[in-house]
Amino acid sequence: MKIAVFSTKSYDQEFFENANRTNEHELTFIKPRLTSETWILANGFPAVCAFVNDILNKECLERLAAGGTKLIALRCAGYNNVDLEAASQLGIDVVRVPAYSPYSVAEHTVALIMSLNRKIHRSYARVREGNFSLDGLLGFDLHGKTIGIVGTGKIGVAFGKIMHGFGCKLLGYDPNPHSELSAEGMQYVTVPELFSSSDVVSLHCPLTPATRHLVNQESIPLLKKGAMLINTSRGSVIDTKAVIPALKSGQIGSLGIDVYEEEADYFFEDLSDQAIADDTLARLLTFPNVIVTGHQAFFTTEAMSAIATITLQNISEWEKTGRSINLVGS
Ligand code: NAD
Image 1 (cartoon, protein in one colour):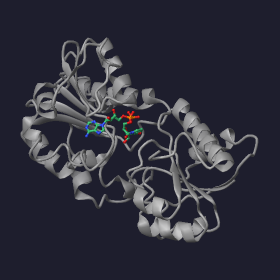
Image 2 (image 1 turned 135 degrees about the vertical axis):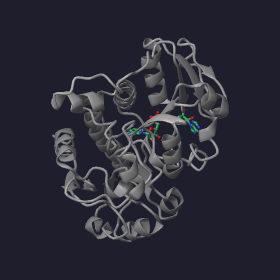
Image 3 (image 1 turned 180 degrees about the vertical axis):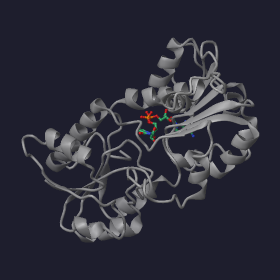
């Protein structure tokens, strides 16, 4: 099948070419993001492969449909960037990769927690300057601390199992509770209880109307004073503007984010020779107790390989049967 692969980086091309060794599909790699301005690059392609920051709104989908596109193959789990109603009305199917390696994201979450807690980012820079002092590097034992997991799906479960191994107590919130972390002693509680009892709150829910700005001006005061907040889910689960005064006052003790609500103009690009125009992002980067990574939690060899393989399998299945087990909304 002819597939236009948007937002392509060299690493995407490498993993997709490897997954398409038999040349079953005809892949065209396109560097720009997919938006209602760049859709023309997909004109005549029955399938379009898109990533997290491509904007598949109604306007873009209408143009794609007029150009002959019948399938959007997302190479990610989240689908908050697609207007599913418009896609359905236009007869465009949407497939995604619901699971590739939950360990990739769970382990990156732990990396953020460990770096923030033990100030690895600061000690790395300090030692390279010949400064071996310990002032300001004091951390805490994770053993015995309480970890609040918002969203106990595949990634939340993988993360909970790791934190249980550290000797942490686990609290969870999920509108669809299940027993996967019961052996680890996880207790389901309400969001306010989770916020007020956790030393670390980690977000692993999808971005939906219910989770948009779940962490906001009203809910931040519920957090334990000085708690660590981690977000590797989607940026808009946090109202970032509300987090800045909380970091200044110490209500939030530290913040680790792999996603940011306005990340689309920044993440995945080398903008090191430019000033950051986004004042909220720029302010966040000034805090010593904030670590921002550029949506890299998924970025392991195992995850990239699985993403490319499953994306192409989804397309093959859809091409042969008109359906896919990974159809969004089925
Ligand atoms: P999943 O579908 O397995 O689990 C999501 C869980 O969130 C489900 O158990 C669901 O019931 C729960 N949930 C739904 N609404 C909720 C709410 N209002 N409050 C709390 N929980 C709620 O998904 P997953 O594979 O674990 O991925 C979780 C999220 O992580 C994805 O939606 C995606 O946004 C994000 N993600 C980020 C990266 C990255 O690189 N940073 C990579 C993959 C996924």
